[in-house]
View 1 (cartoon, one colour):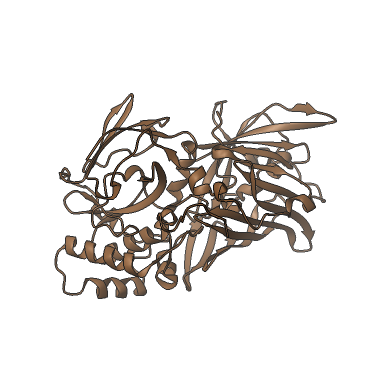
View 2 (spheres, rainbow, N blue to C red):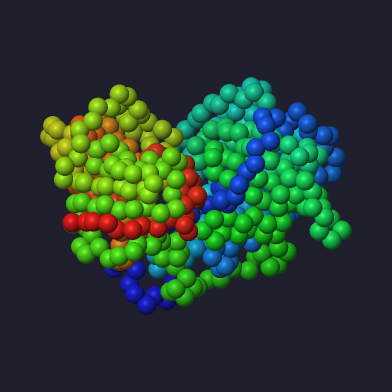
Length: 491
């Protein structure tokens, strides 16, 4: 346990997310705000892939630091076998969040072809009572996926047009492409969206460090940019990331050393919060808020929903939230907000049964929306959870933070026929703003609720930055540690 000078749980900070999705799965997605130069159209890395030597064996260890504090380590290895190349990844993190040390583990075991492309894999992640497992087999022109969450086994088939890789393989892949100074496109499997996406990698000219050469890789994953430094053996040297994150190569014995307790001031919920220039009295009853947001590009975020949050100006960025008089708007494709997805399983029998039971006898979407909010608030235990939330898993475990509350709410609402979306942003508490998630339902306008706080109408200190599913949260990395809020008016 962390020794706290204040009761974090009493302050409800444990409701609020820190987007600490396990780094084994996100480390290559992106956590560095670095400039990526454009050098023309990218080419597929397999087009220049050299012959892979018979011996690509080896292992590497790295430590993970956040704000100068070590929070975890990762391990990677390649091993030749009669079946092909065996590739292993493992990550462990201990993160002080909300008054306790949260532990997360993730692993990946894969069989690769001689060109390092994926033939099959089994990846998993566990944190507390939550876990998810993904199995994949590449069969000619398709990737057959089986993912298990909440005791449910689901399948998905993804078309494949060529070799595919994991993000963690990037240093080794670039080595066997010959370190050419080009902009490469590398098709990788993204476990958050359970899909394939292109990783853009710009390889710099080599720099000599001692007797070896190093290369800087400018990486762009769906608009999120990172830079890593690797050596001539295709091994990671370091990866500096936003918000004070650092991953660097270290010997095994040093990497394995982790702290088991932290001081109160080391809690990362507070360390990664967003500064406010003034105090808001009685924030949970606030119905109107006008703010200026500093260090955020409005073109890269969704700072207005057309209803109760409006983007007033782009320079400076001014946002107005009005929960009393939202503007009615027409939505062209409401079916998009009723669909099931990988982790919002609104068609699952357990979700449908629970939704029907909660809303029995109710006729209007407003009544149903509020009843579902009350049920989620009362039945889901409040606790920080570092996981990839799945609605059926949350319904089974009944524990979590705002991510878990929100994904279950969205699934239950859609099962009841209520158009619903996930909102990602920040919320005010005790002099600062914290990263948070909550749902909004369409009632002729976008009505924001917060089942984590037990609010039928989310108070006006809920400032929307993005909308969408769990993988959208990674886009916050470009503002973490930089975003600031200036209060202009509230009541």
